[in-house]
Amino acid sequence: IEFIQSYYFNKLEFTRFSSSVGKFVGFTERGVKIAAAWNKDASFLSAIKAQKEGYCLNNIQIWYNNM
Image (cartoon, rainbow, N blue to C red):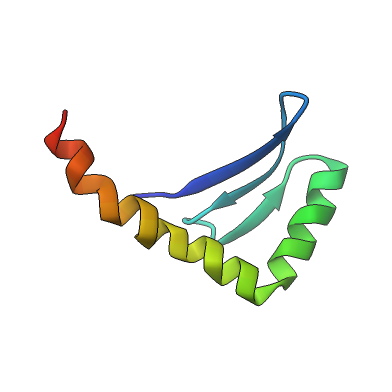
């Protein structure tokens, strides 16, 4: 299971967090700066990493049962 959280502005993805990478990645000049700032904040980064367990792993059995 992979948790992905993407951030868009004007239909353009500028930053993404992927649980397989374990950090934010920027896709625009501004997105790279934002990703670097968010990656430096250890508490914010650990909170985002915890969302995989809190959201994905908590609900995966429910989703598979409803398919």
